Length: 343
Image 1: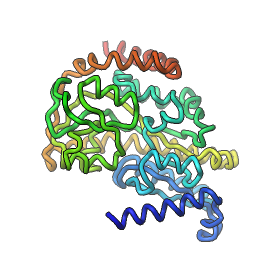
Image 2 (image 1 turned 30 degrees about the horizontal axis):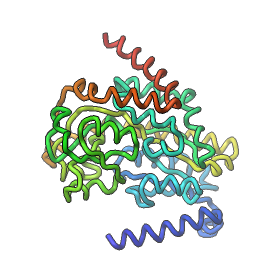
Image 3 (image 1 turned 90 degrees about the horizontal axis):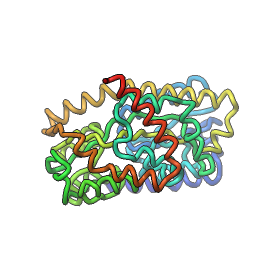
Image 4 (image 1 turned 60 degrees about the vertical axis):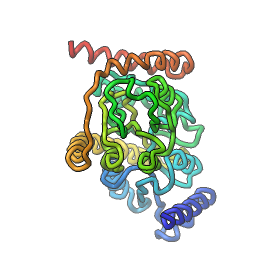
């Protein structure tokens, strides 16, 4: 553990120095090639990492004479928030982060933290795959030093804990880790639990040591991040569909020629396609492993009972943040279309 902390500190110093001084130091090491550094919080087996391997493949196949791509998984370069800051300065070039981490820089991203925003995965995917519609949101952070290139499916978030959660009342008195988003904090409070925002990398130890009772995330957190070893109950209340996004340093992106920029965008889009193909398989594998190897119990619940508890959170968000109104209304139109299809 001490070695990893020293390694992280050393990398951070080097990357920060490179971000401040430019990339000439790396040019000399790589024979003139520009190193593209990408950070994310997931393991090497995670669909997002597999998607970024496709990104790397395309960039190096088409622009390999100029660029070499290095991927740093497992929060090796720090938490998502820290990695975003490094991307802002240009110390690294890209980071994958949850939209909850982007809220600090663009209030419109808060929309994705709204509980029960989407009523189906089909509606969720249609909205996120509408590249033209999403472009305005993606470009809204340019002044903050980064731009979103694409999104990744991070599944449906539900609660998991050391105690079974069958009704909203079972959450009362529990301490639950949430993403660092005011909306997520208010959602957990509405269920009667205590919200504990913290870095994703800290969750395993916090549950193990009893600092918190559980967290909320998709099924892959149980296996890829080993949370199923310490939290044995996963309840399908399905409160959020929160995408992860690929952020790129604005100055770097603007420095690319039109042809290079198109290739980077092509690589980003292909990374999303690969990630989505891998996602469904990964969820089924995670559920099987968590149930049969980790001893996790998966609990089906009355989702409507959980929805009813957070109506006030939705209303308060719409009243307090006008930046999310247009997108909320657009999503409701898409939701309605799929609800009518079901009927």
